[in-house]
Image (tube, rainbow, N blue to C red; front, top):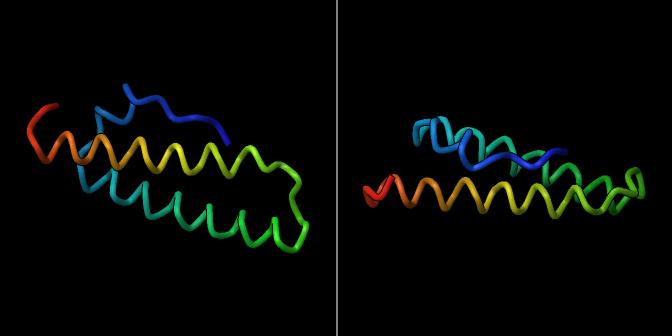
Length: 68
C-alpha cells in the first residue's frame, strides 16, 4: 500500500474522492480482518490506509469550504 500524494488528490473532484474513500475503507476492513486471522503481518499498511482516508477527508472538507 503506497501513500497517496495530496497534490494528486487535490486534482480530483469531491465525488471521486468520496468513491476513493469508500474503496479505501473497504480495503482497510479487509486488511483488519486478515490481521485478526493472521493472514497478513504488514501492520504498517493499516496505518497508511488510515492516513490516506484522513488525507482525502481533509481535502473534501477544504473543497466544500471553498479553500481549494
